[in-house]
Amino acid sequence: MNDLNVDILVNKDHLLPSSYVPKDLVVTDQNENNFHNYKDPTLKPMVRKDIYPYILKMFNDAKKDGLEIIVDSGYRGYHYQQVVLDALIKEKGDIAYSLVALPGASEHQTGLAIDVAYYKDGVYNDDVKESDIEAIWLAKNAYKYGFILRYPKEKENITGFQYEPWHFRFVGLDLALELFSNNLTLEEYYAKNIKR
Image (cartoon, rainbow, N blue to C red; front, side, top):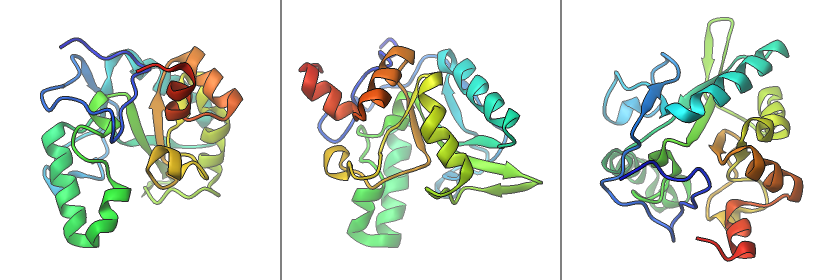
């Protein structure tokens, strides 16, 4: 299977096949992926090679503003997503289904989605909050690099997920600008354009 179009809609209603793996994945950061506790302590965050330059540009521009943003989580395969979900169900019960996508419904499987964290003065922080200056910067600027805040506040009933100020999805420069300018989620965009 070839790499997916960057504007693909992936959610609980639009699933990826279990066999899908992006062709060219690259490691973005040497930090241990925050999901390593579920399976593999050597796991590093990865994304599709074609979007990596956009991440570098975004993070380098953030750094010019004094912000140290890193990729905390990137690609997660179908079967690994099941491991993550099972662990969270064991820990939190049924609420896990609103916190973590089902296998096949996770944008992380596309290699186009990242969860961010911060690294400042040797301290790693993956507890991203809406009020963090890094989260504010990303929410205002990510579209310039082809990314959208995928699960925005007050759109939970549309996306099916709680607000996640740490989860960004690459959709390309043009679509990111359109979604940002019109305050649309991917679900709203696809419904409006009757696309799939």
